[in-house]
Image 1 (cartoon, rainbow over the protein chains, first blue to last red):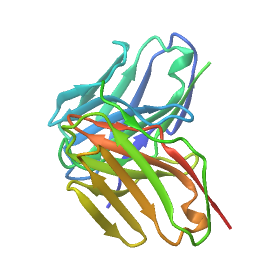
Image 2: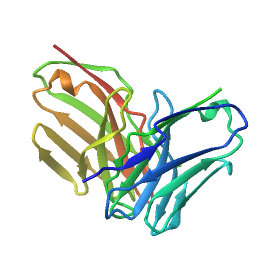
Image 3: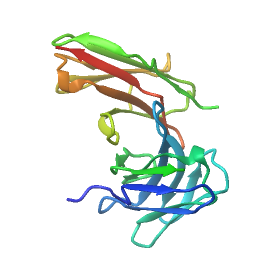
Length: 112
Length: 108
């Protein structure tokens, strides 16, 4: 069975641009969570969606938004990119909102 | 503010010895606890989860939970060089929060 898939794997943007990251969960998983991980730190929670509804939001500015589609895939959007947004963006899926997270390989974003 | 604390390390352990990784958390209401392993440049990989006080064993790994002390640990027996990685502790209340991770280095 396919695991969590994310795209793109790497991307380079300039300040002020917009980025969309995509995630497909493990088949049967209805919950998708997004995390940001900078070098030397643990993953920081951005969003959780369950059954297409936002279930939780971390301490990130409104430039960050997300949604979940009827097939449970998800998008993370970041507007007006800043240098500090450079990070590994991880998507994880789970069977339930409180269940074990299974991560994709991540999307590495570099903002110049 | 809900927090998960880990010693960042590096923790150096000789090959074949027991590696002990520790984690404390601030929210007494936390119900589930996870250990993830992350190799450099890779995404986190689930090793174990534990929900009840006590020990849970899976192969060379043992997770230990003490809710009264708000403490969870991971023991790795017969440590191998391939165990060298960052180990992330994660705690779930209404969302899963990760610690900063402990870098483990197994010395051949």
